[in-house]
Image (cartoon, rainbow over all chains, first blue to last red; front, side, top):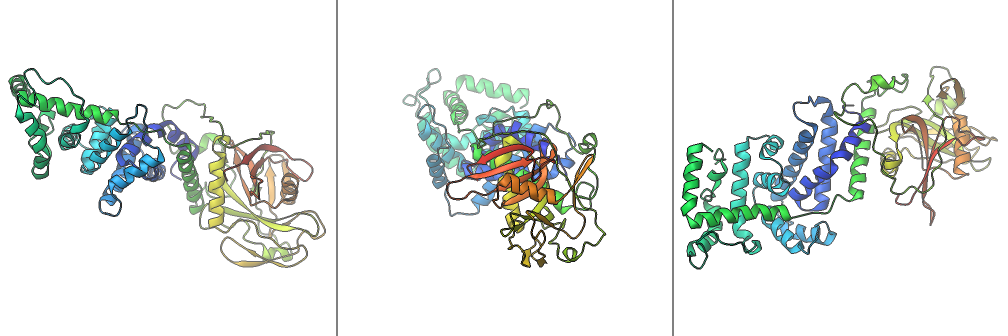
Length: 214
Length: 306
Protein backbone atom coordinates (compact mmCIF):
# COMPACT_ATOMS: atom_id res chain seq x y z
CA UNK A 1 0.00 0.00 0.00
CA UNK A 2 1.49 3.26 -1.08
CA UNK A 3 0.14 5.48 1.64
CA UNK A 4 -1.12 5.41 5.16
CA UNK A 5 -4.91 5.60 4.80
CA UNK A 6 -5.36 7.37 8.11
CA UNK A 7 -2.76 9.98 7.30
CA UNK A 8 -4.14 10.38 3.83
CA UNK A 9 -7.65 10.81 5.14
CA UNK A 10 -6.42 13.56 7.38
CA UNK A 11 -4.55 15.12 4.49
CA UNK A 12 -7.74 15.16 2.49
CA UNK A 13 -9.64 16.69 5.39
CA UNK A 14 -7.13 19.49 5.63
CA UNK A 15 -7.15 20.36 1.95
CA UNK A 16 -10.59 19.40 0.80
CA UNK A 17 -12.05 22.89 0.90
CA UNK A 18 -9.40 24.34 -1.38
CA UNK A 19 -9.39 21.32 -3.64
CA UNK A 20 -13.16 21.47 -3.88
CA UNK A 21 -12.91 25.15 -4.76
CA UNK A 22 -10.68 24.27 -7.68
CA UNK A 23 -12.83 21.40 -8.88
CA UNK A 24 -16.18 23.16 -8.66
CA UNK A 25 -14.91 26.30 -10.37
CA UNK A 26 -13.31 24.32 -13.12
CA UNK A 27 -16.23 22.03 -13.79
CA UNK A 28 -19.21 23.99 -12.54
CA UNK A 29 -21.31 20.95 -11.83
CA UNK A 30 -21.10 19.73 -8.23
CA UNK A 31 -21.58 16.06 -9.03
CA UNK A 32 -18.93 16.17 -11.68
CA UNK A 33 -16.63 18.14 -9.41
CA UNK A 34 -17.10 15.54 -6.68
CA UNK A 35 -16.35 12.76 -9.14
CA UNK A 36 -13.22 14.54 -10.30
CA UNK A 37 -12.11 15.16 -6.75
CA UNK A 38 -12.71 11.53 -5.86
CA UNK A 39 -10.75 10.34 -8.88
CA UNK A 40 -7.97 12.72 -7.94
CA UNK A 41 -7.82 11.58 -4.33
CA UNK A 42 -7.73 7.93 -5.29
CA UNK A 43 -4.99 8.70 -7.77
CA UNK A 44 -3.08 10.64 -5.15
CA UNK A 45 -3.49 7.83 -2.64
CA UNK A 46 -2.12 5.34 -5.12
CA UNK A 47 0.80 7.57 -5.97
CA UNK A 48 1.55 8.72 -2.44
CA UNK A 49 4.42 6.31 -2.20
CA UNK A 50 6.15 7.97 -5.11
CA UNK A 51 5.74 11.48 -3.79
CA UNK A 52 9.26 12.73 -3.23
CA UNK A 53 8.60 16.13 -1.80
CA UNK A 54 9.85 18.00 -4.84
CA UNK A 55 6.87 20.27 -4.40
CA UNK A 56 4.63 21.06 -1.49
CA UNK A 57 1.94 18.52 -0.75
CA UNK A 58 -0.65 21.19 -1.41
CA UNK A 59 0.74 21.88 -4.84
CA UNK A 60 0.94 18.19 -5.60
CA UNK A 61 -2.68 17.62 -4.63
CA UNK A 62 -3.81 20.67 -6.57
CA UNK A 63 -2.02 19.44 -9.64
CA UNK A 64 -3.74 16.08 -9.46
CA UNK A 65 -7.14 17.70 -8.96
CA UNK A 66 -6.62 20.13 -11.83
CA UNK A 67 -5.55 17.33 -14.12
CA UNK A 68 -8.56 15.24 -13.14
CA UNK A 69 -10.84 18.20 -13.81
CA UNK A 70 -9.18 18.95 -17.13
CA UNK A 71 -9.56 15.33 -18.16
CA UNK A 72 -13.26 15.56 -17.45
CA UNK A 73 -13.56 18.82 -19.31
CA UNK A 74 -11.91 17.34 -22.34
CA UNK A 75 -14.12 14.28 -22.22
CA UNK A 76 -17.12 16.54 -21.85
CA UNK A 77 -16.02 18.55 -24.84
CA UNK A 78 -15.94 15.38 -26.88
CA UNK A 79 -19.40 14.45 -25.69
CA UNK A 80 -21.87 16.92 -27.13
CA UNK A 81 -24.96 15.55 -25.41
CA UNK A 82 -25.06 17.75 -22.36
CA UNK A 83 -24.48 21.41 -22.96
CA UNK A 84 -22.68 23.60 -20.49
CA UNK A 85 -25.83 25.62 -20.04
CA UNK A 86 -27.79 22.52 -19.09
CA UNK A 87 -25.20 21.61 -16.52
CA UNK A 88 -25.24 25.11 -15.16
CA UNK A 89 -28.97 24.86 -14.76
CA UNK A 90 -28.36 21.67 -12.84
CA UNK A 91 -25.90 23.56 -10.67
CA UNK A 92 -28.48 26.21 -10.02
CA UNK A 93 -31.12 23.64 -9.22
CA UNK A 94 -28.78 21.86 -6.84
CA UNK A 95 -28.00 25.12 -5.09
CA UNK A 96 -24.27 24.73 -5.57
CA UNK A 97 -23.78 28.28 -6.65
CA UNK A 98 -23.51 30.50 -3.64
CA UNK A 99 -25.73 33.52 -3.82
CA UNK A 100 -24.89 35.76 -0.94
CA UNK A 101 -26.05 38.90 -2.67
CA UNK A 102 -28.49 37.69 -5.25
CA UNK A 103 -25.69 37.22 -7.74
CA UNK A 104 -26.62 33.80 -9.02
CA UNK A 105 -27.45 35.11 -12.46
CA UNK A 106 -24.07 36.76 -12.69
CA UNK A 107 -22.34 33.62 -11.53
CA UNK A 108 -24.19 31.55 -14.08
CA UNK A 109 -23.29 33.93 -16.85
CA UNK A 110 -19.67 33.89 -15.81
CA UNK A 111 -19.54 30.12 -15.60
CA UNK A 112 -21.28 29.75 -18.94
CA UNK A 113 -18.76 32.07 -20.55
CA UNK A 114 -15.88 30.32 -18.83
CA UNK A 115 -16.99 26.98 -20.17
CA UNK A 116 -16.54 28.20 -23.71
CA UNK A 117 -12.83 28.69 -23.20
CA UNK A 118 -10.21 26.09 -23.95
CA UNK A 119 -9.53 23.97 -20.85
CA UNK A 120 -6.02 25.29 -20.39
CA UNK A 121 -7.24 28.88 -20.32
CA UNK A 122 -10.04 27.96 -17.96
CA UNK A 123 -7.61 26.34 -15.57
CA UNK A 124 -5.34 29.38 -15.58
CA UNK A 125 -8.24 31.73 -14.92
CA UNK A 126 -9.67 29.54 -12.18
CA UNK A 127 -6.40 29.49 -10.30
CA UNK A 128 -5.25 33.05 -10.89
CA UNK A 129 -8.40 35.12 -11.13
CA UNK A 130 -11.08 33.12 -9.38
CA UNK A 131 -8.98 31.75 -6.54
CA UNK A 132 -6.31 34.43 -6.43
CA UNK A 133 -3.31 32.13 -6.56
CA UNK A 134 -0.02 33.82 -7.40
CA UNK A 135 1.04 33.18 -10.96
CA UNK A 136 4.10 31.30 -9.73
CA UNK A 137 1.93 28.92 -7.71
CA UNK A 138 -0.48 28.44 -10.59
CA UNK A 139 2.44 27.69 -12.87
CA UNK A 140 3.69 25.04 -10.50
CA UNK A 141 0.25 23.49 -10.21
CA UNK A 142 -0.24 23.47 -13.96
CA UNK A 143 3.29 22.37 -14.67
CA UNK A 144 4.02 25.20 -17.08
CA UNK A 145 6.06 28.37 -16.99
CA UNK A 146 4.80 31.55 -15.39
CA UNK A 147 4.78 33.17 -18.81
CA UNK A 148 2.49 30.48 -20.11
CA UNK A 149 0.11 30.98 -17.22
CA UNK A 150 0.05 34.72 -17.88
CA UNK A 151 -0.49 34.13 -21.55
CA UNK A 152 -3.30 31.68 -21.02
CA UNK A 153 -4.96 33.91 -18.47
CA UNK A 154 -4.67 36.96 -20.69
CA UNK A 155 -6.08 35.17 -23.69
CA UNK A 156 -8.85 33.78 -21.57
CA UNK A 157 -9.75 37.24 -20.25
CA UNK A 158 -9.73 38.60 -23.76
CA UNK A 159 -12.11 35.91 -24.88
CA UNK A 160 -14.35 36.45 -21.91
CA UNK A 161 -14.48 40.21 -22.31
CA UNK A 162 -17.15 40.40 -25.00
CA UNK A 163 -19.18 37.74 -23.28
CA UNK A 164 -19.21 39.51 -19.98
CA UNK A 165 -19.72 43.03 -21.21
CA UNK A 166 -23.21 43.16 -19.79
CA UNK A 167 -21.89 42.31 -16.35
CA UNK A 168 -19.21 44.95 -16.18
CA UNK A 169 -19.86 47.59 -13.58
CA UNK A 170 -20.16 51.06 -14.98
CA UNK A 171 -16.68 52.12 -14.07
CA UNK A 172 -15.63 55.63 -14.77
CA UNK A 173 -14.12 55.82 -18.16
CA UNK A 174 -10.51 56.49 -18.54
CA UNK A 175 -9.72 60.22 -18.58
CA UNK A 176 -11.14 61.76 -21.67
CA UNK A 177 -12.74 58.53 -22.77
CA UNK A 178 -16.33 57.59 -23.23
CA UNK A 179 -18.03 55.25 -25.60
CA UNK A 180 -19.92 58.11 -27.07
CA UNK A 181 -16.85 60.21 -27.57
CA UNK A 182 -14.82 57.24 -28.63
CA UNK A 183 -16.81 54.86 -30.71
CA UNK A 184 -13.71 52.79 -30.89
CA UNK A 185 -14.32 51.54 -27.36
CA UNK A 186 -17.62 50.00 -28.30
CA UNK A 187 -16.10 48.71 -31.45
CA UNK A 188 -13.36 47.01 -29.46
CA UNK A 189 -15.97 45.04 -27.55
CA UNK A 190 -18.10 44.29 -30.55
CA UNK A 191 -15.20 43.13 -32.56
CA UNK A 192 -13.42 41.27 -29.83
CA UNK A 193 -15.28 38.03 -30.18
CA UNK A 194 -14.72 37.93 -33.89
CA UNK A 195 -11.06 38.53 -33.35
CA UNK A 196 -10.96 35.84 -30.70
CA UNK A 197 -12.48 33.38 -33.07
CA UNK A 198 -10.00 34.14 -35.74
CA UNK A 199 -6.72 34.91 -34.14
CA UNK A 200 -7.04 35.58 -30.42
CA UNK A 201 -3.79 37.47 -30.52
CA UNK A 202 -4.58 41.09 -30.66
CA UNK A 203 -5.96 41.97 -27.26
CA UNK A 204 -3.16 42.59 -24.83
CA UNK A 205 -1.75 39.15 -24.22
CA UNK A 206 1.68 40.62 -24.66
CA UNK A 207 0.99 43.03 -21.82
CA UNK A 208 0.77 40.06 -19.50
CA UNK A 209 4.23 39.05 -20.48
CA UNK A 210 3.13 35.66 -21.66
CA UNK A 211 3.91 35.48 -25.31
CA UNK A 212 5.49 32.10 -25.22
CA UNK A 213 2.39 30.31 -26.37
CA UNK A 214 0.79 30.69 -29.76
CA UNK B 1 8.03 41.20 -20.28
CA UNK B 2 11.19 42.97 -21.10
CA UNK B 3 11.56 46.41 -19.52
CA UNK B 4 11.77 48.15 -22.86
CA UNK B 5 8.60 46.50 -24.06
CA UNK B 6 6.81 47.30 -20.82
CA UNK B 7 7.91 50.91 -21.03
CA UNK B 8 6.73 51.17 -24.61
CA UNK B 9 3.33 49.75 -23.75
CA UNK B 10 3.10 51.97 -20.68
CA UNK B 11 3.80 55.07 -22.62
CA UNK B 12 1.27 54.03 -25.25
CA UNK B 13 -1.40 53.56 -22.61
CA UNK B 14 -0.77 57.05 -21.31
CA UNK B 15 -2.18 58.64 -24.39
CA UNK B 16 -4.30 55.91 -26.00
CA UNK B 17 -7.77 56.19 -24.53
CA UNK B 18 -9.07 53.10 -26.31
CA UNK B 19 -6.31 50.93 -24.93
CA UNK B 20 -6.83 52.40 -21.46
CA UNK B 21 -10.45 51.41 -21.61
CA UNK B 22 -9.65 47.96 -22.91
CA UNK B 23 -7.10 47.46 -20.19
CA UNK B 24 -9.62 48.51 -17.57
CA UNK B 25 -12.21 46.19 -19.08
CA UNK B 26 -9.84 43.27 -18.96
CA UNK B 27 -9.11 43.99 -15.34
CA UNK B 28 -12.82 44.01 -14.68
CA UNK B 29 -13.02 40.51 -16.13
CA UNK B 30 -10.67 39.37 -13.37
CA UNK B 31 -12.84 41.08 -10.79
CA UNK B 32 -15.95 39.48 -12.19
CA UNK B 33 -14.36 36.04 -12.12
CA UNK B 34 -13.27 36.57 -8.54
CA UNK B 35 -16.81 37.48 -7.54
CA UNK B 36 -18.20 34.05 -8.42
CA UNK B 37 -18.69 31.99 -5.32
CA UNK B 38 -19.80 28.45 -4.70
CA UNK B 39 -21.11 26.72 -1.66
CA UNK B 40 -18.66 24.59 0.29
CA UNK B 41 -18.39 20.93 -0.49
CA UNK B 42 -21.45 19.09 0.81
CA UNK B 43 -20.71 16.75 3.66
CA UNK B 44 -22.15 13.87 1.68
CA UNK B 45 -19.52 14.37 -1.01
CA UNK B 46 -16.78 14.51 1.58
CA UNK B 47 -18.02 11.31 3.19
CA UNK B 48 -18.21 9.68 -0.22
CA UNK B 49 -14.59 10.49 -0.95
CA UNK B 50 -13.52 9.34 2.50
CA UNK B 51 -15.28 6.07 1.84
CA UNK B 52 -13.59 5.76 -1.55
CA UNK B 53 -10.20 6.24 0.05
CA UNK B 54 -11.03 3.63 2.69
CA UNK B 55 -12.20 1.22 0.02
CA UNK B 56 -9.10 1.81 -2.03
CA UNK B 57 -6.97 1.16 1.03
CA UNK B 58 -8.79 -2.08 1.76
CA UNK B 59 -8.53 -3.20 -1.82
CA UNK B 60 -4.84 -2.56 -1.93
CA UNK B 61 -4.26 -4.56 1.22
CA UNK B 62 -6.27 -7.44 -0.13
CA UNK B 63 -4.73 -7.28 -3.57
CA UNK B 64 -1.23 -7.60 -2.20
CA UNK B 65 -1.34 -10.53 0.19
CA UNK B 66 2.30 -11.33 -0.41
CA UNK B 67 3.41 -8.21 1.32
CA UNK B 68 3.90 -8.15 5.01
CA UNK B 69 1.04 -5.73 5.47
CA UNK B 70 -1.32 -8.02 3.65
CA UNK B 71 -0.49 -11.19 5.49
CA UNK B 72 -2.81 -12.02 8.31
CA UNK B 73 -0.61 -14.76 9.66
CA UNK B 74 2.15 -12.36 10.53
CA UNK B 75 2.21 -10.50 13.80
CA UNK B 76 1.31 -6.90 13.59
CA UNK B 77 4.22 -4.57 13.24
CA UNK B 78 5.01 -2.10 15.92
CA UNK B 79 3.32 1.25 15.32
CA UNK B 80 6.61 3.07 14.96
CA UNK B 81 7.66 0.80 12.15
CA UNK B 82 4.40 0.91 10.30
CA UNK B 83 4.51 4.51 9.14
CA UNK B 84 7.69 4.43 7.20
CA UNK B 85 6.65 4.79 3.60
CA UNK B 86 5.00 8.11 3.54
CA UNK B 87 4.29 10.79 6.05
CA UNK B 88 2.35 13.94 6.01
CA UNK B 89 4.61 16.89 6.54
CA UNK B 90 3.89 19.64 9.02
CA UNK B 91 0.82 18.13 10.59
CA UNK B 92 0.06 18.44 14.27
CA UNK B 93 -0.05 15.17 16.14
CA UNK B 94 -3.67 15.48 17.07
CA UNK B 95 -5.93 13.93 14.47
CA UNK B 96 -9.05 15.74 13.46
CA UNK B 97 -12.01 14.69 15.48
CA UNK B 98 -15.06 15.83 13.65
CA UNK B 99 -18.43 15.07 15.16
CA UNK B 100 -20.05 12.01 13.65
CA UNK B 101 -22.85 12.99 11.40
CA UNK B 102 -25.22 10.24 12.30
CA UNK B 103 -24.11 8.73 15.54
CA UNK B 104 -26.57 8.81 18.37
CA UNK B 105 -25.61 6.57 21.24
CA UNK B 106 -22.03 6.22 22.31
CA UNK B 107 -20.64 3.75 24.80
CA UNK B 108 -16.91 3.28 25.05
CA UNK B 109 -15.05 0.66 27.02
CA UNK B 110 -11.72 -1.02 26.44
CA UNK B 111 -10.54 -4.17 24.72
CA UNK B 112 -9.39 -5.66 21.46
CA UNK B 113 -9.91 -8.62 19.17
CA UNK B 114 -7.56 -10.19 16.76
CA UNK B 115 -8.34 -13.13 14.62
CA UNK B 116 -5.43 -15.42 14.00
CA UNK B 117 -5.32 -18.74 12.27
CA UNK B 118 -3.13 -21.66 13.22
CA UNK B 119 -3.61 -23.99 10.33
CA UNK B 120 -2.34 -27.45 9.81
CA UNK B 121 -4.27 -29.63 12.15
CA UNK B 122 -7.34 -31.38 11.00
CA UNK B 123 -10.49 -30.78 12.92
CA UNK B 124 -12.81 -33.47 11.77
CA UNK B 125 -15.66 -32.99 9.38
CA UNK B 126 -15.68 -29.26 9.77
CA UNK B 127 -12.28 -29.02 8.18
CA UNK B 128 -13.56 -30.24 4.85
CA UNK B 129 -16.34 -27.79 4.71
CA UNK B 130 -14.99 -24.62 6.19
CA UNK B 131 -16.30 -21.83 4.02
CA UNK B 132 -13.24 -19.99 2.92
CA UNK B 133 -11.88 -19.19 6.31
CA UNK B 134 -9.09 -16.63 5.88
CA UNK B 135 -9.33 -16.89 2.16
CA UNK B 136 -8.40 -13.72 0.31
CA UNK B 137 -11.21 -12.51 -1.89
CA UNK B 138 -11.14 -10.42 -5.00
CA UNK B 139 -11.03 -7.17 -3.17
CA UNK B 140 -11.18 -5.63 0.24
CA UNK B 141 -11.45 -8.46 2.69
CA UNK B 142 -9.86 -11.62 3.89
CA UNK B 143 -12.50 -14.09 4.86
CA UNK B 144 -12.75 -15.06 8.48
CA UNK B 145 -14.60 -17.97 10.00
CA UNK B 146 -18.27 -18.56 9.44
CA UNK B 147 -19.78 -18.16 12.86
CA UNK B 148 -22.93 -19.94 13.91
CA UNK B 149 -25.01 -17.47 15.83
CA UNK B 150 -28.43 -17.60 17.33
CA UNK B 151 -30.16 -19.91 19.72
CA UNK B 152 -30.84 -23.58 19.46
CA UNK B 153 -33.29 -24.21 16.72
CA UNK B 154 -32.77 -20.81 15.14
CA UNK B 155 -29.11 -20.60 14.31
CA UNK B 156 -27.58 -19.01 11.28
CA UNK B 157 -24.10 -18.88 9.91
CA UNK B 158 -22.48 -15.51 9.56
CA UNK B 159 -19.44 -15.19 7.37
CA UNK B 160 -16.99 -12.92 9.14
CA UNK B 161 -14.34 -10.96 7.34
CA UNK B 162 -11.09 -9.37 8.38
CA UNK B 163 -9.89 -6.07 7.04
CA UNK B 164 -7.44 -3.33 7.82
CA UNK B 165 -10.13 -0.72 8.30
CA UNK B 166 -9.52 1.59 11.22
CA UNK B 167 -12.99 2.74 12.16
CA UNK B 168 -13.20 6.17 13.69
CA UNK B 169 -16.31 7.92 14.97
CA UNK B 170 -16.01 10.86 12.61
CA UNK B 171 -16.14 8.68 9.52
CA UNK B 172 -18.00 5.70 10.83
CA UNK B 173 -20.99 6.03 8.54
CA UNK B 174 -18.94 6.26 5.39
CA UNK B 175 -16.57 3.54 6.53
CA UNK B 176 -19.41 1.17 7.33
CA UNK B 177 -21.12 2.02 4.06
CA UNK B 178 -17.91 1.26 2.24
CA UNK B 179 -17.43 -2.01 4.08
CA UNK B 180 -20.98 -3.12 3.33
CA UNK B 181 -20.63 -2.20 -0.31
CA UNK B 182 -17.40 -4.09 -0.57
CA UNK B 183 -18.78 -7.09 1.26
CA UNK B 184 -21.85 -7.19 -0.97
CA UNK B 185 -19.60 -6.95 -3.97
CA UNK B 186 -17.61 -9.88 -2.69
CA UNK B 187 -20.71 -11.80 -1.60
CA UNK B 188 -19.16 -11.90 1.81
CA UNK B 189 -22.23 -11.17 3.86
CA UNK B 190 -23.91 -13.60 6.12
CA UNK B 191 -25.31 -16.88 5.00
CA UNK B 192 -27.90 -18.76 6.90
CA UNK B 193 -28.70 -22.36 7.57
CA UNK B 194 -31.13 -24.01 9.93
CA UNK B 195 -29.59 -25.71 12.91
CA UNK B 196 -28.81 -29.33 12.50
CA UNK B 197 -29.17 -29.28 8.74
CA UNK B 198 -26.29 -29.38 6.33
CA UNK B 199 -26.34 -26.11 4.51
CA UNK B 200 -24.80 -24.48 1.53
CA UNK B 201 -22.67 -21.58 2.51
CA UNK B 202 -21.67 -19.50 -0.42
CA UNK B 203 -18.17 -18.25 -0.07
CA UNK B 204 -16.83 -15.02 -1.36
CA UNK B 205 -15.12 -16.87 -4.13
CA UNK B 206 -18.44 -18.14 -5.31
CA UNK B 207 -17.97 -21.74 -4.26
CA UNK B 208 -20.68 -23.65 -2.52
CA UNK B 209 -19.41 -25.58 0.43
CA UNK B 210 -21.32 -27.73 2.79
CA UNK B 211 -21.62 -26.44 6.28
CA UNK B 212 -21.81 -28.92 9.09
CA UNK B 213 -24.24 -28.79 11.89
CA UNK B 214 -21.69 -27.07 13.99
CA UNK B 215 -22.86 -25.86 17.30
CA UNK B 216 -25.87 -28.05 17.33
CA UNK B 217 -27.45 -27.87 20.71
CA UNK B 218 -25.37 -24.94 21.77
CA UNK B 219 -26.15 -21.31 21.58
CA UNK B 220 -23.25 -20.53 19.31
CA UNK B 221 -20.69 -22.38 17.31
CA UNK B 222 -17.92 -21.82 14.84
CA UNK B 223 -17.50 -23.41 11.48
CA UNK B 224 -13.80 -23.81 11.02
CA UNK B 225 -11.42 -26.20 9.44
CA UNK B 226 -8.52 -25.19 11.57
CA UNK B 227 -7.94 -23.89 15.02
CA UNK B 228 -8.97 -20.34 14.51
CA UNK B 229 -8.62 -18.33 17.63
CA UNK B 230 -9.18 -14.82 18.75
CA UNK B 231 -5.85 -13.60 19.92
CA UNK B 232 -5.50 -11.00 22.60
CA UNK B 233 -2.22 -10.27 24.33
CA UNK B 234 -2.06 -12.63 27.25
CA UNK B 235 -5.25 -14.29 26.35
CA UNK B 236 -6.60 -16.64 23.73
CA UNK B 237 -10.24 -17.17 23.19
CA UNK B 238 -11.83 -19.49 20.73
CA UNK B 239 -13.80 -18.06 17.88
CA UNK B 240 -16.89 -19.39 19.61
CA UNK B 241 -16.40 -16.42 21.88
CA UNK B 242 -17.09 -14.18 18.92
CA UNK B 243 -20.29 -16.03 18.21
CA UNK B 244 -21.36 -15.56 21.80
CA UNK B 245 -20.41 -11.92 21.60
CA UNK B 246 -22.51 -11.45 18.47
CA UNK B 247 -25.46 -13.09 20.13
CA UNK B 248 -25.11 -10.90 23.17
CA UNK B 249 -24.58 -7.62 21.39
CA UNK B 250 -27.02 -8.17 18.54
CA UNK B 251 -29.70 -9.48 20.83
CA UNK B 252 -30.50 -12.43 18.63
CA UNK B 253 -30.57 -10.46 15.40
CA UNK B 254 -28.43 -11.72 12.57
CA UNK B 255 -25.74 -9.18 11.67
CA UNK B 256 -25.43 -8.00 8.13
CA UNK B 257 -21.69 -7.73 8.52
CA UNK B 258 -19.11 -8.86 11.05
CA UNK B 259 -15.75 -7.36 10.27
CA UNK B 260 -12.68 -7.94 12.37
CA UNK B 261 -10.79 -4.72 12.03
CA UNK B 262 -9.71 -1.81 14.22
CA UNK B 263 -11.33 1.01 16.09
CA UNK B 264 -9.30 4.13 16.73
CA UNK B 265 -6.13 2.15 16.29
CA UNK B 266 -6.95 -0.80 18.51
CA UNK B 267 -8.20 -4.13 17.40
CA UNK B 268 -11.94 -4.37 17.36
CA UNK B 269 -14.80 -6.13 15.66
CA UNK B 270 -17.61 -4.38 13.86
CA UNK B 271 -21.03 -5.92 14.23
CA UNK B 272 -23.53 -4.31 11.91
CA UNK B 273 -27.25 -4.87 12.22
CA UNK B 274 -29.05 -3.77 9.07
CA UNK B 275 -31.99 -1.42 9.13
CA UNK B 276 -35.36 -3.09 9.20
CA UNK B 277 -38.67 -1.32 8.87
CA UNK B 278 -38.55 1.84 10.90
CA UNK B 279 -35.54 0.63 12.87
CA UNK B 280 -32.30 2.19 11.63
CA UNK B 281 -29.08 0.28 11.20
CA UNK B 282 -26.84 -0.09 14.22
CA UNK B 283 -23.12 -0.55 14.37
CA UNK B 284 -21.28 -1.91 17.37
CA UNK B 285 -17.55 -1.99 17.73
CA UNK B 286 -16.56 -4.45 20.39
CA UNK B 287 -13.28 -5.26 22.04
CA UNK B 288 -11.51 -8.52 22.75
CA UNK B 289 -13.34 -9.31 25.93
CA UNK B 290 -16.69 -9.42 24.26
CA UNK B 291 -18.33 -12.77 24.76
CA UNK B 292 -21.64 -14.34 25.57
CA UNK B 293 -21.35 -12.92 29.08
CA UNK B 294 -19.41 -9.65 28.55
CA UNK B 295 -20.33 -6.97 26.04
CA UNK B 296 -17.07 -4.96 25.92
CA UNK B 297 -18.63 -2.38 23.62
CA UNK B 298 -16.14 0.19 22.42
CA UNK B 299 -18.58 2.22 20.39
CA UNK B 300 -22.16 2.09 19.31
CA UNK B 301 -23.76 4.21 16.64
CA UNK B 302 -27.19 4.29 15.12
CA UNK B 303 -26.70 4.84 11.41
CA UNK B 304 -29.80 6.54 10.16
CA UNK B 305 -28.46 7.05 6.64
CA UNK B 306 -27.25 3.57 5.99
